[in-house]
Length: 257
Ligand SMILES: N[C@@H](CCC(=O)NCCCC(=O)O)C(=O)O
Image 1 (cartoon, protein in one colour):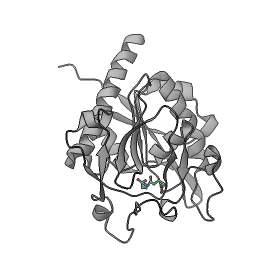
Image 2 (image 1 turned 90 degrees about the vertical axis):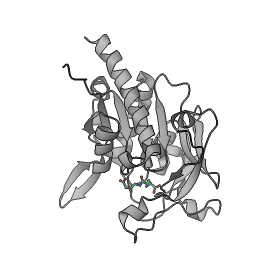
Image 3 (image 1 turned 180 degrees about the vertical axis):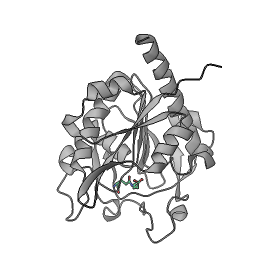
Image 4 (image 1 turned 90 degrees about the horizontal axis):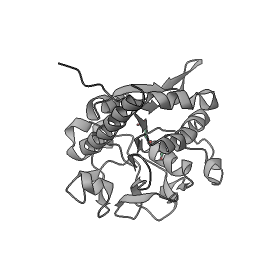
């Protein structure tokens, strides 16, 4: 029986210091979700900034998964005020993902952004971020309680309302699914061309798509990678992403037999 070729899913990495050495890392939950939830072949993308050959990389992948991270996008990328002292940044990741997002969209490569990945997609396309949602007085608490066990931190935190006739609504029949919530930052100004796909009860944008893109594009503020196989809503997102990656892979194979 011929085996079905798996689409290659590029996964963004963060730089983290382990002892004296910088390591390029992606959380296992993202790697497993790309493999098991989307049915792809995970490929970690190092955060090499302009030293990364974007063209060669994009020739080799069928989808791009932008991971969450404790670090924040540096505010100069969206003309925001300087971050509070002690804010964790990852300039090498910014220098890698921001151009990669624009280039992947231009090529029609399927894109799924999660949490930091959602935020960096908005910034890459010209939007801006609230740096500390809890200090705006506009929103409910969106941060996790770090004292709790992981299953509680990643457990259902609040509902989101899916936009009528949107991409997310086409994937899942229930209009107000519960999601987890583990973030301090959030969308302030939505980038031009992005369509709101879901909002929290306080009005915060929780998901967006890019309807005029050549490829499948979706980003979510929550973490659908968490125990993806156990949650039908989260699984529906990774199934749709995987299907888009498979379709891109088939078209790429036809172009370069
Ligand atoms: N730093 C941003 C984004 C939050 C985020 O992506 N958290 C995930 C951390 C764990 C992981 O790597 O999955 C913010 O706080 O808004």
